[in-house]
Image (spheres, rainbow, N blue to C red):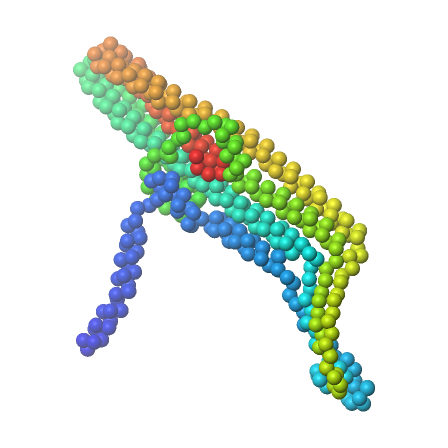
Length: 425
């Protein structure tokens, strides 16, 4: 083999090596999931529903210019005396070989104000599409935040159960040691082993919940259901206080659902004005060139006016536009009532979960830890029986899991409030 050929074949493998190296770099990148902001950024770039809604909004915005544009001009050619009866010639359909050929250029002109109103209607529809896109983005973000909170909760449950299993394992060894020297009955050892088995079963259920939460989170991004996720670091920081009146003011200013219905009112108002403007005629202006086969070329100027004769049809259109406007205004009031009810419910649930988490964290959890420490010390000295020690262990487990549930519920309710408000708090 020639050296040049070997070099050429060797160079042919370079793109493959580069591709494999790039693939190794991509595969070695850490999976998302450590923070909710990381997941939201991934969804904004990759969620197909959001991309579809964005394209629809851009399409609606592109229609505004065409809605208010002038109609296209029309070109007309008319051939008169095609059988050439006046000149005694033969029949023809070619311009210039008939009695007279007329060329006309006609430009339709809508009545004053109609073009602007059509543009206003299209602009309102485009604004509705844009606010619908914003509402969809908020809905996706709320679902991701809620799924992340459940994922964080399931991972936290696994961590707490693993720590409790380690504690129970130490308690079991302590019971076996005391049973070996005859200080406690065998029942203490059996109770500890039974408690360990029950916790292992509970851990299996927590692992199932973790997989379910991860699959739901991956579906929202979207990724494969079994795609790996990083272990969540922490929930988003909770705001110190949320006044309901302040939140409602933010809803009225920022809610895309409410903005969409207000844009519908604006479009309905422009549509009503356009229906009344249709009472007036439209125009057309034209320029005509007359070219006889034998004779002098002449020019004509033309003005055409439509006759709005079907007033009954126009009155029906006007009534329709009035009803549409009233319907749009009623929808604004209906959406305000619905949002106010949802905000009140989400705010009450957020406050309740916040109070519950505060009580569990600041009061019950320190008490449960102190109770467990006292029970362990008492069991070692024989002043406390094994049932008391197990009850103390169960109590601290319940309190820790309840605190985890309250914090996850608090994050979920905050996500609902942020969706209603129209952005992060």
